[in-house]
Image (cartoon, rainbow, N blue to C red; front, side, top):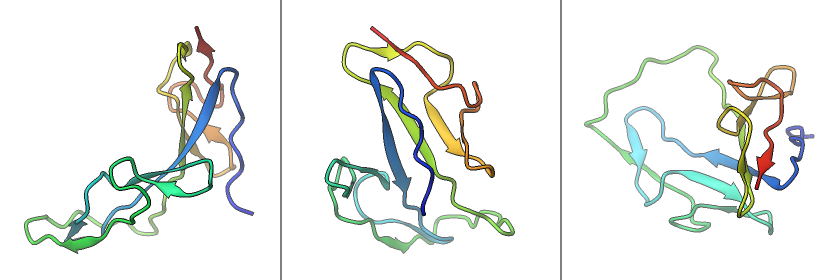
Length: 117
């Protein structure tokens, strides 16, 4: 059934994104930052490389970060305002999905951001 759909806000939109990262001792080989957003055609697109997926390559100079037991991927969305509007409420517009499948912002909880002209 996938992730719950985040609520819409007036004069704004939701931007879904994923970030590809490499395992220990590897780094992204391709251009771009590994962040892909979902476009209107339901394709994951990176601003620098389009729909080309990143690749990982060995990175001997990269120290091994400490491992965590039972780690997980955190899903996040970022609300942005349309042209000529800006976020009026506190917070950065980034919401993450909590264990109760609620979209939560670190600064304002489940209160949705608002856009103002």
